[in-house]
Image 1 (tube, helix red, strand yellow):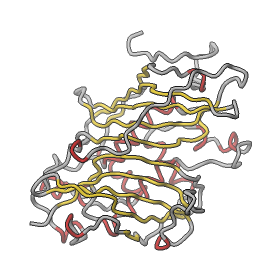
Image 2 (cartoon, one colour; image 1 turned 180 degrees about the horizontal axis):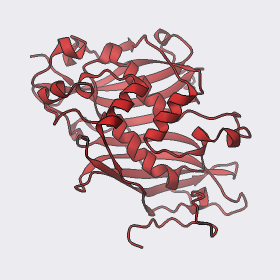
Image 3 (cartoon, helix red, strand yellow; image 1 turned 120 degrees about the vertical axis):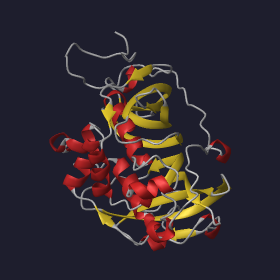
Image 4 (spheres, rainbow, N blue to C red; image 1 turned 90 degrees about the vertical axis):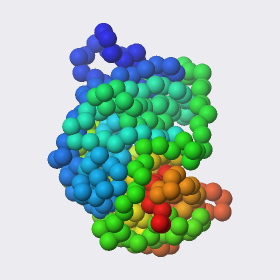
Length: 358
């Protein structure tokens, strides 16, 4: 049928058991079900669940004044929606989502826009245990006009259906370490920026490469909150919802969707980066360790690079690190041998637009 995915399914049941590692073949294209129309209610719920205070995603008048069409979806909100579309085909039988690369936010998503998603399998590699393998996909989100809204690569560890099945020939994609500054797009000109309303006087010129910022605030996650957030994106991964099934898992309980960690850490970064609310690209991302209900998220950031985009707008390349149950001002990250410190949840490298002084 037109629009059907090329992934092979097992069994004859009318329900979808999800794809296992051996079902994925490089070059396969998956057309993900259930387009989602974004509403103003979705935007309000997103803010309620993660506490975001960035002015251009809180105030329609502010958004229009800086060059956006109006009050739209935070880029991470759009990312989670597109990600959620892909879960039933890619990660329903996942052990863990491992990382991201080459993510680009290309145009605003406004209330009334409908997002659709497709993915191409670009790599596979069986793990040495013979029970799981890693699958790489590039996922694209498009609006109702067929325009690309965002694109990113992610890789996920997926269970095998049959441990005895032969391993496919490994294909590991060559991914860029970062999105080049010259390739950044979709940023507003930021010609009029009200620092009293945005919450901070600090602009592009005030940040130095190598500077670390303690975001200070923390947020404790509870069961209902993370489930509502994940349902908002129509993410159906078993590890987030099936309490009964997860009793027999490695941790014996549900995991909190890593996207919840990203959004909350990003919202916490308002305290220190209030004017850098416009995410432009995801260079890399790693979910370092799991998060569970009643853990508390804290965050800190490091300025990795800077770039001038226009006379009125610049970009900061930031490393956002989320930690749990420890002071963010300790700047926990990696030890001398390159291993992540205890309690590090997320290592997230991204570009964000920020106004320049004038």
